[in-house]
Length: 471
Image (cartoon, one colour):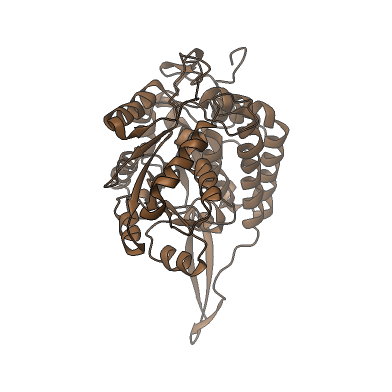
């Protein structure tokens, strides 16, 4: 542990010094080096998996109330340490501190509490005699040892989306957080070590191509759960083949927002300001493809430019804020996309980064007459006109992604008709990027399959078993 940060790994109920390669951690807001973190070694990856395997029989056989008590204790711990966890997330990702403290950390605690309750109220088909002389009933049992790969854009929150349902269902977990943002999850490891039995949760940081690859290819892993890019999901599928591991994939997204002529323009602009630029657009569900009815296209663009001009880089600003991108490489990738648009890129004046060394990109509108199917993952949205409802639906669905979408209209019949034809795991109406723990979050097409959040995630991290008794 350094003077400022917890950097030890969680291995079989102990906090241990990692034994792998060293790598620097940088603050996106300034570009300054803030810590040195050592990756887990290949030997420690193997130890973590074997510790999880050894812990599985006891943990999976515990009654739901016992596992729930542990999750509730974790939720209490998160709330008690909310300020410190938010500080680390703010420093490591560049997100505004107030945003993390007020929105993301409370959801972390809420997700643990939800699954503590959900595991005690699981439902199944009624037991009975479905064949004469035989009684059948169903068990819902844990799968085994799960390898979790969590992303850099919501380090603690999306790790929680794996930890809570996975552990509630009775599995044990080896979690590899993103090498780009591991400070908050390593702090979490230092706080959770005294709450869970040894081996139930192991947290091992490291490069995806090395530590992540070894983890998902380990022959003692029963399931792989990934939140990441499509390519990362493909690596997971390849790793699953030799031993037929189960997989749970939440991959990329390019969310369309369809704005009809009857939409409330002011509310739509404000809703898409949040939906497209929260976390600097670094979100698989971000409203990054705005499809706007021809009749209001120009008015919408003008109003949206005005709204974007009000975004501040000052994280203490009482108004809407915009943080930096996660790395220099991500910044350069987004800038290349903007520069390629030439005079079709509209950059509202007034956005001033507080530090020239940080990974900042100002909010941008890209006028795309024909639309685009390339994920931006930054503070830039495309705006494309459409002529009628059928064209809007076709344009929205013309993508390999299928994670999220939204429809903006005052006509409830149109809203229901259009959302019924969209091919996305979530479709919002007159809002965007709002999540409820009780509702599932997952994708179609190349955005993956399986659900985060809701009781559906418990089903994904468990398996039905049929027991039949002859009499």
